[in-house]
Structure formats: C-alpha cells, structure tokens
Amino acid sequence: MTKTSKLLSLIAIILLNVSCGKDKDTNFTLNASIKGLKKGIVYLQKNGDSTDIIDLDSMIITGQPDFSLRTNIEEPLLLYLKLHKNDNEEHYIPFFADKGEMTLHTTLKNFNFDAEISGSKQQALLDEYLEIMGKYNDKNLDIIEASLLAQKENDSIAVDSLTKVSETLLKRKYSFTIQFALNHKDSEIAPYLALYEIPSANPRYIDSVYNGLDTNIKKSFYGIKLREYIENRPIR
Image 1: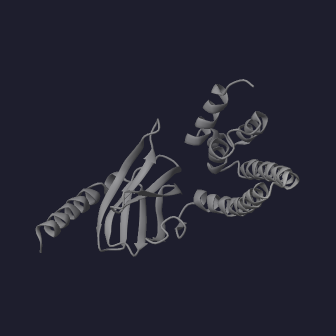
Image 2 (image 1 turned 120 degrees about the horizontal axis):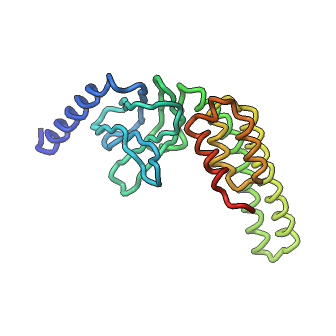
Image 3 (image 1 turned 30 degrees about the vertical axis):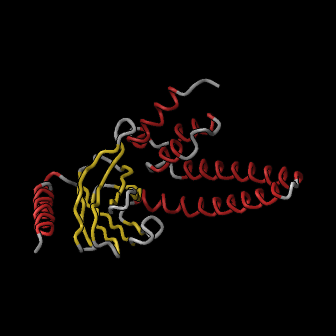
C-alpha cells in the first residue's frame, strides 16, 4: 500500500468514526450511491443565513459507490448533495429533506440528471412540480431556437410573434406555480415555491399563497421567510 493510499484509508476511518459518533445526535440520514464514482468527496450541505453554504457532513469515497451522510434537522428543509471529484468543478443535487431516512441514487456520468430521490413527502411534491416545469422549459427552449432562426433570417414578424408566445408561456408557468402552491397549502413546498420560483410575480398572488397556508406551515422555516419577504419587499 502506498503512502497516499494509507493516508486516504486513515482519513476515511477517522471520518467513519466521527460519523458513527454523531448518530445519537442526528435525526436525518441520506443513503446514497453514485454509480461509476471511484474517488472523490461527497458533502451534505444546507444554505446558511446569508449566501454561505454550510457543510453538515462529508465522506471521502475511495472505491465504494454506496455511502451515508447524516445530520440533524428541525423541520423539512432543502439540502444539497455536493460531489467534488478533482475536475475543478462542484456538482450539486438539491433535495427536500425531512426527518428520517432518504435514498438518492445517481451516476457519475449524469450526476444531476440521473438523480432518483425518495423518502420525503416534500421531495415527492417537488418532483411532481419539476416534471411539469420541465415540459414548460422544453417549450421555452423551442421558442428560443425558433426566435434565433427568425432573427437570423430578419423575419421581424416571426420574432414579434414568438416574443408574444414566450410571454404567454411565462404567464402560464407562473400561473401553474401559484396554483400548485395553493393546492398544497399544507406542505412546506408551497412557501418554498413562492419564495424561489415566482418572487417577481404580482404581489397579490404571493400574498394569496401565504395567506392560504396552514397555520403550522406559516410557522415553518420557509413560511417565516416568505412572511419576511412580503413584509420587506419594495412597494410598487
């Protein structure tokens, strides 16, 4: 065994011991696997109070595709699985965590796109939402492609028409997001979507999402952040 291998093995053992020592203080476990990953570092992270990202747990991968990361969360929260694999890039998968255990399976080749996540009601709703939004985004890409072609051909009529189609599509996306949030007023996903997917929507729609939230959701992390956003937003 080389000196480097011995060092990596020692670090892995230390991390494992630390992780095992934290079990009594944790209420969330992410059981994950990254097919094809031979070497790298995985992190469990969350957003800090500002723009900082906080590391909650980490593990060095030295050949094993399966691993578990643990932390303590007070309520459902968006977390991140970050992969660092010495390619000068950082790769992230966001997911909505809740107390208990979740599973995440993906591949090294398509780290983000192949991610399959299960284990929380909030993540199931987020997946449902993202599936529909993906269709809207695909349509938007088609519009952009057609618009670029029209510009290249100096077809101003087509450009104007496609601009209107794009604006209509954006309104439909906002409308869908608002309705989805209203339909799930008993989930933390509702204030989360209002905060991060449609913050520039008409204020009355944002207000309607907040006012319709169940009382316990208003008191949640994202419910409180949505209330603060409403209270501090500029008057139009």
